[in-house]
Length: 109
Image (cartoon, rainbow, N blue to C red; front, side, top):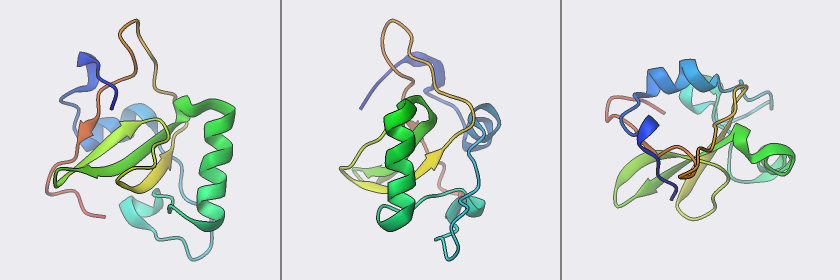
């Protein structure tokens, strides 16, 4: 996954404030993360894929790596648990996209 030092230690609350994920508008959505998480199948996945094709810089993937839950900038398929579509894009600097953000154990789905 991509790495850059700027967001390495960002807490989930700071990530929310910085990137402003949208609410999942689909009826019957999984509703995780205060209704902001999009599923990995069906119409929710279709919406994420459409957003990623328009500008992947507005998409983050919630995944699990070695038992640790992380947010990764961009659209990923391996080890994915869901997606976020954000109002504010993540920005690539010369070294690449922002770091994965390790989710704190107290953050609830």
